[in-house]
Structure formats: C-alpha cells, structure tokens
Length: 330
Image (tube, rainbow, N blue to C red; front, side, top):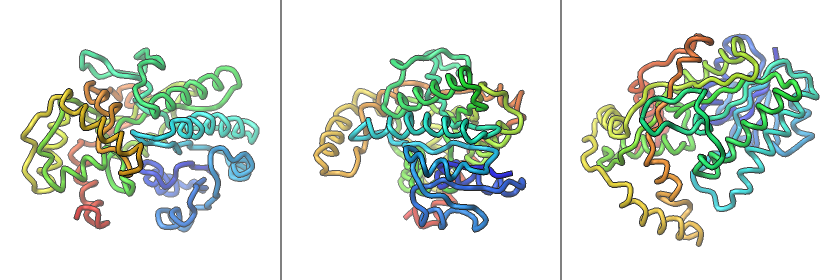
C-alpha cells in the first residue's frame, strides 16, 4: 500500500509519516529539500524531490501509489509576494490533483484548514456547514487555502476526484522545527511568560491527534466531505497561562487593546518590505485575525471518523518538551 505524502517534513506531515508506517503503509515523501527530509524522516521512507508546480516530478512520485496525502502548503502570515503563495497553494494543488486522477490514485486526503470556514461572530464554535466566501478571508494564506479547497471540491464533483477534505485547526506539539506562528507564540511564552495578550481565541489540537485524523479520513471519510480536526477552544490568555505554567514562568498580566497593535504592524511591515528585518513582528492581517474568536467543533469527525483529541495542555507540554530537547527554548 504505497502512499505519497506531500509536506512530509512539516509539522503535521512529520507526525503523520510514522503513524502510516506503523499501520503498514509504504510511504513516499514528496519534498523540496531531500537533505532536510533525511533528518526528519524514517530510513524506510522513499524520498522524491520536487515542488508542486513540477509536473514531471509529481508524475514520477505518484507512479505506483494507491493513496495520496496532500499536506504541503506555503504557510506564512506575511509574504512580500502573495502571487508566489497562490502559485504553490492553488495552482500546485490543482496540478497535483489532476496528476492524481491520471495516475489512478484510489483515495486522497487533502489538508485544507479551518481558516477556509471563517468563524462565527458570536463566539459559538463553528462547524463544517458555516458559509464563507473569499471576501471573508483576511490574509493571502487564507485566500489561497480557500481557493485551493474550492478547486478540490469542484474536481470531486466534476471529475470524480476521490478526495476527502480535512480542516485542521491549530496544531501544537513535537516536530515544530520552523516553528509555525502558533509554535512561535508558545516558544516565546515559554521563554518569558507571555505577559502581554490580546482578547482573541483559537482552537488548539495536539498535532499527533490531527495526524491520526488524516489516517481516519483516508479509511473512513466520505468522498467530497470535509472534517474539522480540532481540539480545545481557548482564549489566548488561557493558552498563555497554561504555557507559562508548563514552562515554570509567570503567566500573562497585561491585556493589549487590538487598536494599540496597529502601529507596530505598520512599522514592522514597512521595515520588512525594505528588507531591514526578515519578517514583521506583527502584521495588519494578523491583528485583524486577532479581533476574531476562532472556535471550532470537531463533532462531525468524532461521530463519522472516530476522531478523538487530548486536552490542549498535553499538546503544549509536548511542544515545550520538544523545543527544549532540540535547543530551541534558550
């Protein structure tokens, strides 16, 4: 049972691969950096090099596979050239799905995001039936994922693409080498206690639970249906509080009004555009997102797939432990 995994060195992908191997799947990893892949992946994994706009490389990697997990994406809260993100997330996804059809792939799990659902203004956890549109998507990343998911859904309807869609919330846990934006928040809070916080909320899930949810979607999911893979809904103050406690640091103290963050974002983006800093400390899009309560429900996945998730505190503790073991906490 050969399964191709794109994004195999990412946070979710690097946790999915060992689960697949444990369950008897022969795993191929489609990666851009084979040297990085060798550091992160088991020796049993077959490594194929290429990118999502490389037609020949995709064809080679897919040949002989029965299953496809498409997790690869350009995930950045700030990008100087949004078109490069669309090229990877939208055009690359569309090309990969076309080639999967040509290769006769039997079943596909496409990794979207809860960001494509938007969120409710009343703070009630959103589900898969929440109606959203492109104008609801705040950042280039969210817009690109929204368009990519629409492309996959359209191919399911019109071309018979055998794809199940999963919408992970915010993954936290071991393997966050980059780290992700949320991983950066947890890392920073573990270092200094996260004394400042904004009045926002998000859904935190252990990355290993999300990874197992991908396998459940492959084995039990309904073609064309989407499933939220989430965990606990927490206000940012709660997340900082449990993170600080796990790291033995003082907890959050000062609530920052969202309006006070805008000047920081404007200056940060200005400096980043001039290449004076690598990336902004805050962006206008991230502040607009911080004004929303991003709570979600995984009830459909729990009912139809048998998905379960552990408490958010375990995800945070495992993330901090991994950061410490890999020298990232200092």
